[in-house]
Amino acid sequence: MRAFVAVEIDNADIIQKIKSIQETATFEAKPVRIDQIHFTLQFLGEISNEKAEKVKNVLLTIDFQRFSLAIECFGAFPNTKNPRIIWLGVDKYGGEKLSNVAKNVNSVLSPIGFNVDKQFRPHLTIFRIKTKIGNITNELLKFKDVEFGKQMVSKIILKKSELSKNGPEYTNLVEVNGKS
Image 1 (cartoon, rainbow, N blue to C red):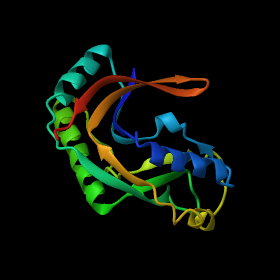
Image 2 (cartoon, rainbow, N blue to C red):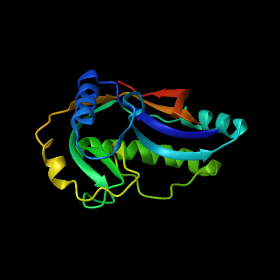
Image 3 (cartoon, rainbow, N blue to C red):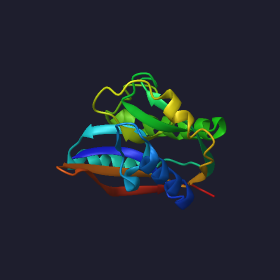
Image 4 (cartoon, rainbow, N blue to C red):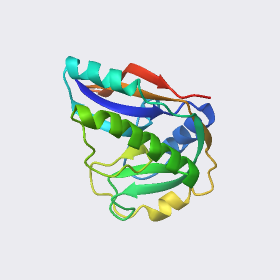
């Protein structure tokens, strides 16, 4: 099974604002399904059921405090002149806290054979771009004043991803709750 560790977005106001942007943007890009928008803390790739059980067990040892982060900026990978992914970023405090949770995830997964291949950058992918569309800097500036609000990060989730002709379908395998 394909699997990853994530933090979901469940703030209805944030979700509605993302949906509104996806519906009004004029560039050629495929919006990420609103129910699939999340922060990926670590992508695990294809793993066996036995390995998934080990992952569940070590994730349950993670201890973290709940925290709040603000969704507040736009960007693109690799950049806005040649975008492949359009994302939303977070405030500095929330980004540091989320990065620490990602480090904790990596520290418990590393001994069972999972290593990160790139530095964690807290972001929510909201569009994917398959073909070259050119510079979207000005288009993104239209949304610069959108205030998304704050998201409480209260749990991390091990998710299974099954690819289908309609895109990926996610199933939660285990949730790790943060402390109040």
